[in-house]
Length: 175
Image (cartoon, rainbow, N blue to C red; front, side, top):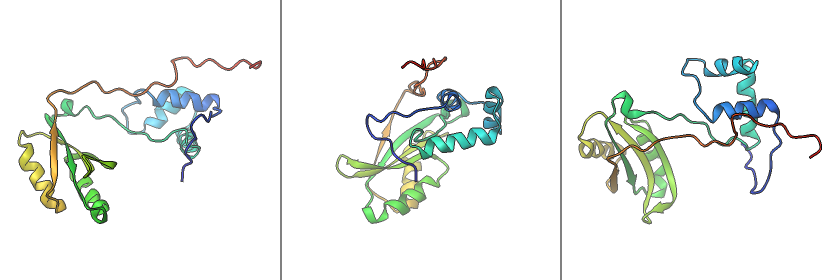
């Protein structure tokens, strides 16, 4: 299990680790082997890139790695966040069922629950305008009946956090 860094704890990073973290905070190549392409830029093999990423995770420096889908650009014109009130004993099975549905891109448990009871969140992307009917079918599939549909009319800019500038200055030996 990866360690969690404590508040105020500072990690010492190698130059390779810094380069990889710098590359991961932006867009990675859209290819079947993105770590091969990243490795070539850094004179590393894809195995080295993956090994270093895993080490960063194990040390608690890199917590998660994800992709941002520009859903409107691929034809998903409707989206909604659906919040579900799920009994604690059913949260895992309901979450697995909802997460397995093709229209669900995100599914996670929230603690504390939203409004004191909505503890499971799903992000739904659809190509049709009939969000309520689609979500009713989802509710039936997961055997859930207490939910709220939260929709938005506008997509806001999605961007990654930037922790390292384009050029990372090396520490002076005298510090």
